[in-house]
Length: 148
Image 1 (cartoon, rainbow, N blue to C red):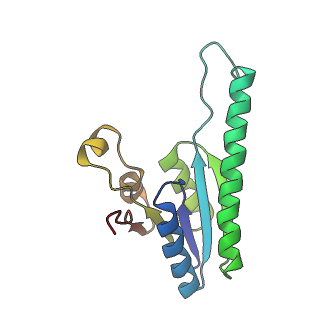
Image 2: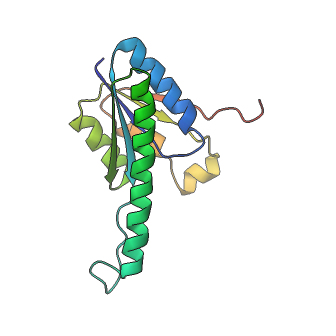
């Protein structure tokens, strides 16, 4: 196993996910590919690129997300784990699977938010979609137990 893809969404699952993926990469001598999929730019009816203030807000959000994913990557590198941190835009599942293919991922390690069945019925789950469509094994890291 040479490449492990780790989707990061900056949720409460992030710390547990990064810890688990880091331990796994270190034990296997694999490279970690951290990837945050940012939402695609919104389409504006009647505007080719949208109002200036919206573009500025979006750029600020993307800069912050890029800094955050780079900081996580730097922490893992400091622990001696070969890590590359990426920020890409696009539809989440399709983009994750495309990145997995591009980096020759042998495994995808992702978090689960533990949403209810009702939430999944209406909104869906990225984890479930990746499990269904991935050509490589997927390891799901559960939501940390908040009762502890």
